[in-house]
Each structure stands twice: as C-alpha cells, then as structure tokens.
Length: 466
Image (tube, rainbow, N blue to C red; front, side, top):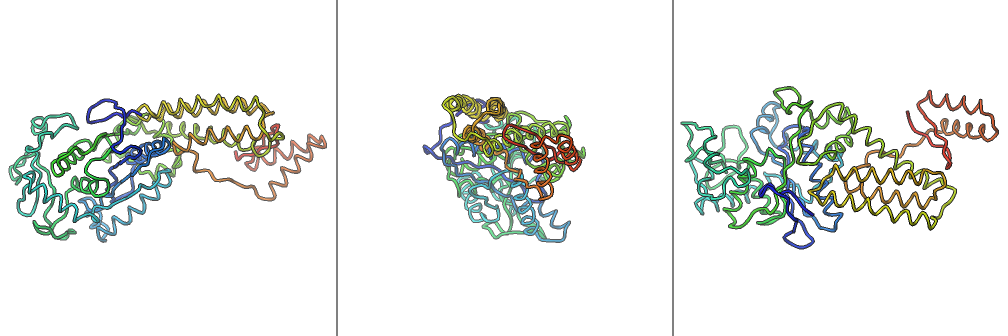
C-alpha cells in the first residue's frame, strides 16, 4: 500500500510502526455551526481509508477531535445568548447526525479540547521548560525560530514565512511567526486556571496534546484538509517534536479543495452550502459518492449537474444489486452449476483491480470503476434468465464486499407494497396466465399511473417506483 506523504511530497510504501496496527488522527470540526460540504470531504475520504485498512486486516485506532472552545464558538454563544458549552454540545449532536447520514463511522475516540486541559497545560509547560515557549502577560507563545524544522511540512523556509507574516507594532510577541499556545482570559470568556493565570488553549496545541494522550508520541497517519497544512499542522509538528524529542507523524495526508460551480467555496461569495442543505437536495449518499468519484488529493467541483450525475450513477449500482437480490430469491434453479462456479472464480480479477487502485494512494475513483466493471460482467451473466439462485448470491457477495469498503449502498431500506397494490399485481399475473392480455395491460397501465412500474423477467415480475 502506497500513500502520498505531504511531508516528503511523494508516494511512499506504508509501513505501520506496530505491525498489524495503525495509529491515525484526523482533525475534526470547530463546533459552532453545521458542517459544510468542504468539511464532508475529509470526513468521507479518511473514513474510507480506515475502512480499507481494516479490510486489509489492519487494526485501526482512529482519533478525531472536536474543537469545543474557540473564538467562533464564543461569538456564536454571545449571538444566541447561551453558553459556549451549550453551543458546542448542540453542534456536536448535529455533526453526528450528518456524519451518520454520510455513512461515516464514529472514530475509536472523539475527544474534546475541554476534556484535555490538564494535558494541554502540561505540554505547554514542557515547551516553556525547554525554551521553546515564553509567557507574556498571561499569554504563552511558541518560539518558532528555535525549532530548526519549522516549515518542513509546508515546504517553506522560516525566512519566507516571516517575510509574508503580518507585523503589528503593538504585538507583544518576540517574532511575528510566533503563535499562541495559551491565551489569557478576556471578560465574559470561558477560562481555566493555569500557571500563567486564567485562560484557554490556543487552537494548535489542542491536537498535539490529544494525539499525545490517545495515540502516543509518534503516530502512523495524520490527516485533514489541504487548508490545514499551514499553519495548523506545521505548528503541531513544531510543538510535538519539541516537547517529545522525537518524530511526530510518519505519513501526512491532505485532501484537495472543493469549489462551487468552478468558483472557490466562500461565505463572502454566497456559494457556501452545509451538508444538511446539500443532503436535502440530493441525499446524503449522493454526497458520499460525489466525494469518492475523484482522487482525494484532486480539486473537486461541486455543482447541481455533477451531483445529479452522481445520483444517477448511484441508482445504477442500486439497480444492479437489486437485480441480483431478486434473482437470488426467485430463480427456479437453486444450486450453482460447474460452469457458473467457474465464472465466479473469474470475478477475482475485479477484486484485484479494486485492491490495486486502493493500494495506489487509495484511488477511490478507480476503485469505483472496478465495481462497475464487476457489476456489468455479473449482470451480463446472471441476467441471461437461466442463472441459479446460488450464482446470484455469490455475485452479490462479491459486489457487496467492495461497496462495503467504500461505504456505499447503505441508505435504501427494503420497501414493501400495500395490500391493494400487491393484489393488483397478482390480478395482472392471473390475467396473463389466462391470456387475457387486455386486462393485464389495463392493470399494468393503472399501476403505472400510481407510480408503480412492472418488469417481467424469467424469474417473475419485478416492480419499482417510477
């Protein structure tokens, strides 16, 4: 398995620190609002990476945090006249609703920043003791010039980063590139006691402390959106490696940006959509399919037209699987023949193509293509009208095996018809048996007008909603 490591800017063979186990951390949302379409991409893509690693027999310890204390949360609390804790808890609940809708499994651990204040304070104190941080009027800043490797993830030397930094003459920092580890409390803000006075943690230190607590000093994979590379992930490296004296992360993975109708997604442009809004228009699973339809590092354009294409592609997958399920339940011949069993063994090539695609920096676009090729081959064979039920079952197992890795085909529940419509379908079947074609056609047209479309197959009549 090869992964593109943002730290080295190349694909590298993935070798976990502990054989058979993976320590993986993903930056979670700042919980002050509903998650937006951009947030959905890392959620979905790294959920698939986790699923695939587990499919390949690895045990994944996956940690994804919640930033539940932040300026944005405080501002929202003031706007709504409630506490910061109430705001955070409200949107954590909404996050899980959207994540479940998107087919994203819960992480092994979902820690909150506010649950880790003692760990954060301990790490900040360690950085002060080692000379990497300093306190000014209750604020604590990281001394970037002391860390030799600063800029190695964003591939920019410190001198260039400093040249682009905003300089404030009233700034109390030693250098414009220094960043806050601890912020002195302001009136009306939540705070915690610390050796430097009442205050709250800076954004970057939260993740360093939580990785340290839940996964250890060195982890296999750290992932997130491309926008987090600098300064957030760069600062995590500086904090963690200075405090712990060892390498922080072996593989850094970052997903590409999403644009809206070929324009960068932005609140100021008014082209900003929450996942909840998009799901109401196209369905949660369509959004998941959309994210998987391109390589995770590629830019992705969100538009109504593209989402409708994804919805149609997803329907094709569902139709193919439903056809197999129908034949498995209704075929006249039950046991698989020797010729059919030989056909099933030929399907292994599609599994291998799927694995090859996912092993190549988990290329989900090519993996989906392998699933469609498998389904097309299967439906050609099974749709002949003479297939056995067992053949259909085995083909269904092959398709389901791969779609489960991608987390697809999870949202449609089995739908039952009411007694009146079932009676009409049976009456049409009786009319056909007695060769009363006019009556059979009349019932068929009446059902169609009611939104029920019938299809006559060698295994019996199938129905679907128009």
